[in-house]
Image (tube, rainbow, N blue to C red):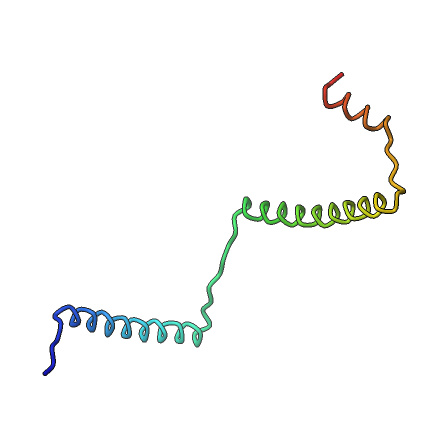
Amino acid sequence: MRIQNPNTIFVQKAYSQSETNKTSKFIQVESAIKSGKSDSVTFSDTTLQLQKISAAMDNSQESRIDKINSLKESIARGTYSIEPEKIAEKLMNSFSI
């Protein structure tokens, strides 16, 4: 005895339509390739600027990591020297004195 749920008919129809759509899309893409058509993408000026900023940030992070590693090494060796004049100058500038 076979029991068929009435909802399975809707699923079967949707699946068969989906397969038909996939086939027609494949044919459209295939014909576009044969005809020499191609897609193109254009980026806005804002997007290009963001890409440049992102690249600059990546470069600055690499140089920052190098600087941090060299400071860690000099602290570990005991050769790191503190320059109180520079610290005082930076503090004065930050408080606008």
